[in-house]
Length: 382
Image: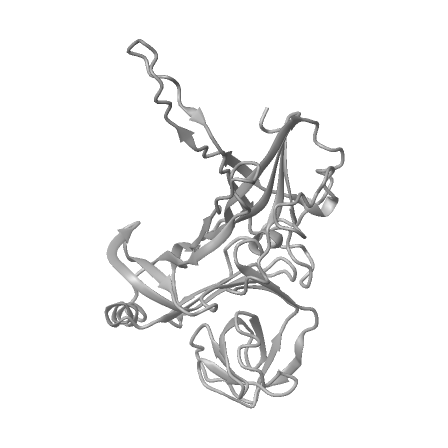
């Protein structure tokens, strides 16, 4: 019975070496749905049988694919990484924890409708806060995000505010856990995956892959991890006792949040973002299945959004599509510290735009690619 199933994952110290090594710890369990396939190499057998019948193909090395679908749920504590964070670290993303809030909140030195010049204690380090949330109080109450940050402490926001920021605008970067792309192989991680199902256990090592995000208005968000791994074994063993005792926060709904494209409201039904990480299993005849632990080979982040048409924003969005102008994209989900999220794409370039209708209203089906070397997509829990 596949309802009697559970998934555990742990970052490996040595790629391809089982990091769980037996019974998963309480921190290893992930609340996820799991699908797997083994993608075997099959070799046609050319031998003659003396009949019309072909000899059966021979199964060679296994190249497993594991798909985990996880609710977008926080840890419940702003500075504690969510349980799925370990998987993002295996998808060419690095984890940065800001354990102390920056700003008291602190008054801005100056501002426009889409930038704020911040003051001490904000650091004069370029891009230090890029991708992080920014809480504004004082003359306004607003949760927004930082798409660009200069050494002059100028923070570019993921939206256009109704009125310009000023010295009356107070700003704070809250405690958060940020995930951002990297090409630094020293930062890359691999994972050990255990899948239990009603008395059976599959073990995989060296897991690396891609992640994507699904946000549906009125619903909850989902993260999908598509991983390649090495197959270790399958054995008959029961799920360890106590694995399901954790009480997790309820995933936040995509309501009362933010959804901004090109600095304006995007009344979308669905936002889809795919990190676009391509992964290969390097050949190795000395490995158990003929392959070394998976490694990433390319990243091509892209997505889609379907905002309703608007006389306020649609013309600017179309012109950006026509001219190839990058647009900031930002979404905020949730309102409780430790269970709220911000996804930021500083430069989304529309590559397709098709007018259509939804419930009798005009909409734009927009496909986009994300621009920016190691800076195209960020996800933060705060």
